[in-house]
Length: 168
Image 1 (tube, rainbow, N blue to C red):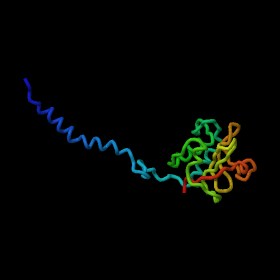
Image 2 (cartoon, rainbow, N blue to C red):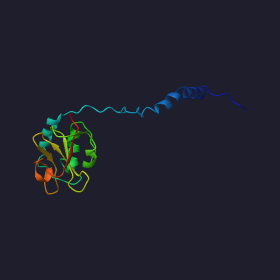
Image 3 (tube, helix red, strand yellow):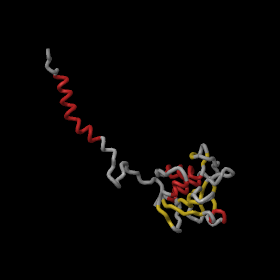
Image 4 (cartoon, rainbow, N blue to C red):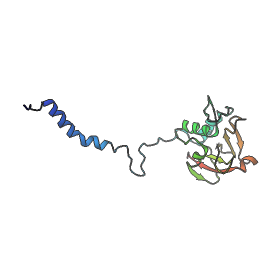
């Protein structure tokens, strides 16, 4: 004995068939078109001068390997990443990865530009933030704290690898 389909089951089947193309098409929504970001990045909330002013507020914070917050202390790239995040800009975690970000610049350093150094070997291993007056602020090493140094100091000048502009 065969029974006729119940109206509720037939309605569900009809609704599923009607919505199926819509459900399948939404699976492609997360794939952006080539060259167009899926999620738009907001404009930075700080310019270079404001970023440097914010960085100066952390002068004296202890160095800590792997540190990325004022409470735990900073290493060089954690300091830079933290400050840029405060400005609404996401940067990679390591100095070497940060070196690959931004626009390469020759001279004419502006406040907020990133300055990079090769302190051990061929790879970029240190980063700081240019203050705009021939100096930079950074978290140098485990024997120190966040501080400002001059770019023309012999140690830093001999290890300078380049600069990148992220803001401006």
